[in-house]
Amino acid sequence: MSGSNILNPFFFRNIVQTAEAVVDTGATELEITHAVPVSGNLLWLGVFAVDTSTINITTPSGYSVANAEVDMSATLEMVAGSFFKKAAGTEGTSTTVTVSVAANGIIIHLMEFSGFTNPGLDKVATTSRNDTTANTISSGTTAAISDSNEVIIAFGGIENGGITSASLTNSFIQAEVTDGPLAAISAASAYKIVNSSGAQETTFTFNGASNDSAIGIISTFKSQ
Image (tube, rainbow, N blue to C red; front, side, top):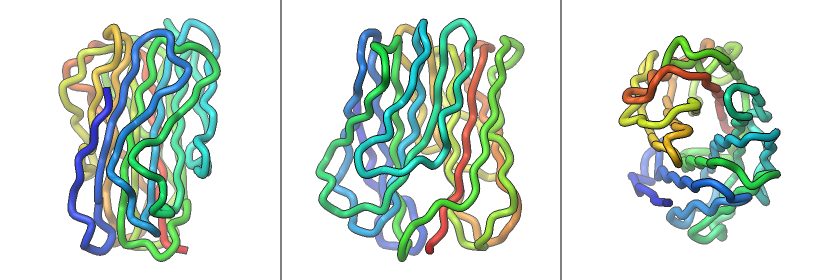
């Protein structure tokens, strides 16, 4: 399954589109469909995958790593990471992500933001929780951002299906939520456009998903 939502591309530091894709057991790659990006915009990809054995994500062609892989061994082996690039405007309408093994499930989220002269990575943070005590996860807390006008993107995955929506703290806005294959995983993404400096964090509550192990990541982007 894959789909996109095209939003408004015409305002400074604005979200242009979001998209999601999910695949069931036995896939080593997943293609996400989206609108053709606008040249110069920020493109962000978040990837969450699980398997019975160790799994790694291959950096998509043309992208750089934002959040390096967070690996965790729970009931399944879990991995999450994010990637970014300055759109060339020639990417077409799909992007493929590859993982190292035939996964039990892969979820990809995409966001595009306008208003960047040259989008660059600023601060990142991650966190993980290997237990079954809650259906929440923090994104981790970044150091204070360098610029007072940045886009903040958070991504969270939980080793349980059934998600219907994500509740978020600190004024983050839900972008996509995905109930993953075989009720094994769920993921949510969120963003915030800020006009002041300071550390950044949000906590995801995976509404509808049962308590289980989870991973959270967050990255901030500025013009360079």
